[in-house]
Image (cartoon, rainbow, N blue to C red; front, side, top):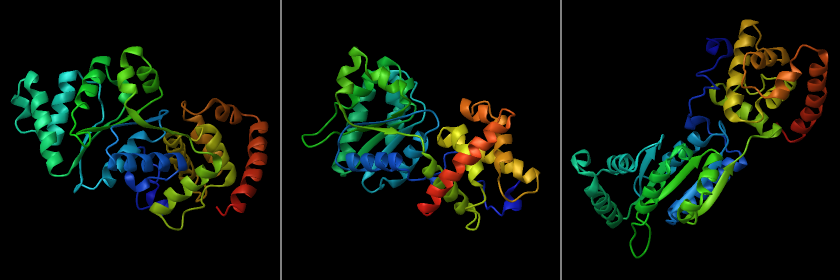
Length: 304
């Protein structure tokens, strides 16, 4: 591995969502702030939408980490492609309903309600986080809506955070789901990183694993990374990881355009423009070099 070669204590660009590497890009930080404030005020439904790879799962894990166990009980369902009964059973298990597996399905809602009331008397808010919410069947979404009908005179007994791809908006636009859509109090969208943010993101991750390694990517490599990834964090991580391998193979401590070119060529998921730039002619390189020079001036001016 290249860990010892670069002096890293761990992989800086792992694809596993790791809260240590949460980068507070403005759309992600805004979404996190909205979630924390809304949940603290018992606002009911909150929706966060983002394209594949923009960091929804990591955001969900950061949220769960930040919610104080003294005031919140959390339930996390990473794959909500469940039947209505499976959803209720999973929620019951997550919030501590005793012997819920042996409870008949037609009685389970009553046990969930009793448990939610018990937690409310302990002044605890219950938050259900659904990742990949766009996969939920229509009947399960309706069951979810009925669960959120449970409330006291003061507040909802169950709050729901829905994290999903843009298809979630299409799903909720269905006429037969309008009742749930009307309950969504806040809606946020995660956006890809711009070039300046990408530079800071790379620097941040490298410094987490080696305080001296923040500037080992050249500007041409960074700009090609930006073009080929479209600013999508998952693609950024994948390409940066492969570029580090390429530089390691050359026994080079700095990641250059040629290393990023190798990474892009090895990644079918890379954006079309990035793959065109590396297509074998010198135009791509000089185009990247020229734009990167301008981008570099901006980055330096902003103190990167």
